[in-house]
Image (cartoon, rainbow, N blue to C red; front, side):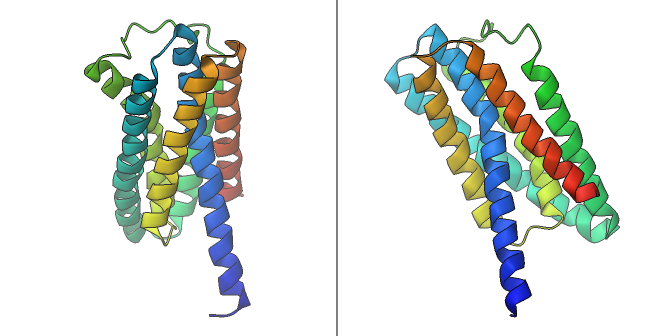
Length: 190
């Protein structure tokens, strides 16, 4: 493996790390909103573990789907992956400015089903990103573990921070994450 192979490998790792953080922003912003309503430390741990689990499971399913699609379609998949990331990032940015995301959720985050629904809702976008990454990523284990670790850590951070700071930070975190995904999607296309 030459010097170009080393740079390509590091470039892929950096890309995965940045995308993991961008996807974790959704969990962070939700955590801030829930934390503002008040949450026990036991629920912080339980919810964060569920979010980490789904941030591993959903991109893993997406990676396998994307790998299969990548073998079928060839070079077209790079443009498809970029398009998916642009759509997902744009959706996250737009949702961050919607007025109905002010933390008033009808789901009780203290119950098992509420935690399951909340963690699944912030992890479903990881499936789309997993599909995109499955078309070009080499290390599936590193990718899904990075997504899970970032999702779990950022949800813990958001939940704990939400107990202490104002509501305004939550939407900006999701907007930042969406902007990062949007930028990566445009890089894939162009």
